[in-house]
Length: 466
Image 1 (cartoon, rainbow, N blue to C red):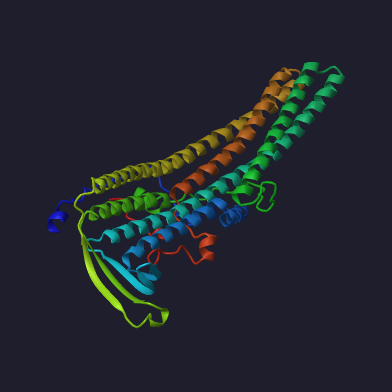
Image 2: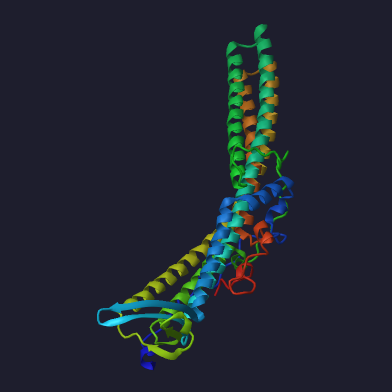
């Protein structure tokens, strides 16, 4: 046994990437709440996310995957316990050279593998780690769902505000058209000026149709995210204005983000599970001892079935000598899986850090863009007012007035989109740094069930850096 076990060397484990990480480019002022969307202080948004967390079918599927993983742990853990089987037999023997005989019997058979080297224990640990990773996948799915609802809700709010703005612009353009038609009637304006203004009115009405289409599509998307048919419109949660941005959340150090993010922790736990799989495959090369016990009774008729009993107990040593390289190939396969997951973990770390940095940079640049747009709008309003006065005094052509009016109205619409985009960048930042939060399903079922009888590690910090 010693010689056989000495032949099975444990493969060297790969070091984790990025032991030291540089700090983020900027930091915030306050730690974000677990339910990050409440920082926008928008009751409508809170309501829509609560509906989605309760009714979304994709999140329900993630919850059921967790139930599958927990059952897999129980299946694997059963190998650490003895097995007990009941047997029964009945036979009738008859032939030309013997008299007819009957035989009935009952018995119990028990077996147990002595886990000398921890092969079964490592396999159970691997399944428990994968189940905990699945719980983290559920938390990551809840974060993604909340972000998707927030994005759709903000886009819908901006689209409705855009429609209000465009309707106001249509009224302005129609008023200008009425003035031009009156001037044309008395010979103070040309027909071309009236036609150009009519084109602007129709173009603005076309903008309204486009926005109405966006509103319909976004309402359908929100309904599906909330687990409702798209035909069911829901007016609850509508907002009259875009929410305030609030203070910048404190992103912390890169290690803090990696410790919080469920998706990164999930990859880490799957990498740890793959390491246990390698250990289990290595130990499968070692000899094993099986304990066997049987108790049985046999009689010619049921009345005498329990008169005589036969019992046996024994042990069996099984030492693998030759299997055509199957066990070695299985070790190589599991080592390759572990290396693949190490690489996947490294990429997950980079992606997580990039999402934070991108969100920080996007919001910072968007704030600068908003300042420029507000300055441009002020200049456009002043330009239009001055050119309109000059046109009425006969000092300039109407085409200059029309161009200035189009510029002003376009900047007004762009400014509203830019305000929405800055909120979307804040959502992306929250999504990039968010940790887990308890969903209505967890509250209803008493939390995520543990795979080992205690608190699950899904909500705890994992050592994701070396």
